[in-house]
Figure 1: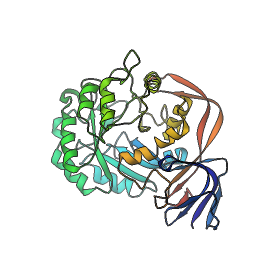
Figure 2: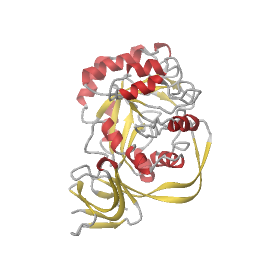
Figure 3: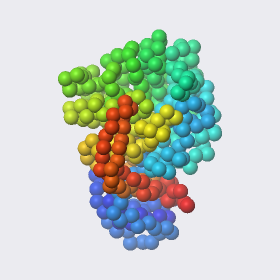
Figure 4: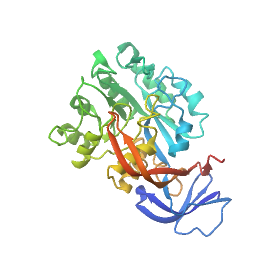
Length: 376
């Protein structure tokens, strides 16, 4: 055995495990999880009193650093958040995905998967001073190129990303989503759909999504919120969930409000997946990373098992990667070790509203590919 984590509280919702166990790794994969592993390993870590989780999966990130203005570096974020799998949400399109693959994904010590943007250029103009929606120019939406590049990179591409709304699709409206559905049908892949300001409306978007498709920014504030003024969940959201649409948080710089969050949680409408949507405009706040986003939900009263599932097993299901999101023997050898830190902490949503908390989650270590990472 290469590595054993000894005596931690293992929480693995995919397997219904929550208790004190040892976790052993061999050959880059999980070897065994047991109350006590008798054999010795090349390396051992005492993690008693800490939480041992399957490697965290951030379903919505933008990590094409250097190739796009929106992108941030994955490695520094991983070192503070314990994220072992970054799913890039359409930063690259067919025209620049080869560069993303060669210059960022392949050299990375971490796992990076991707939704391919329907737009040929990906998210090409995203900054504090320049903001051009990549779905707003129909000339950039070449369905044949999207299909070709997705097929050539099926080991990395987990779905098709499309952004619609007044900011991102402008006068093309709902049309890019209809085009994305056609591409996704051809490939047998799911869609991740972004929605911002209307038009189109949340109803138009949700009605087009199929089982297994993802609506991101599900706790966005008014307008296009899923929360009605009377505190009820909008009917189109309930119908979409009933037929298997996945609802992803996608915190972002403008897409998560505590008011909508509290109302939807109170109505029993939890996000299926919790993700950060970390990018250049929020990496220094209010998002920071996935662990900070998790701490916000801890402060909002979400139970730990539900929270862990939303960043492990649930995103693994959404991207169709059963070898991720669990500590089952034979699965990928990733784990995130965290602790509770007590104190006085302040969190903010995308609108600047403040949330005070007396504890947060703090990274204590991580295992990537069966080895403690980073080594130093």
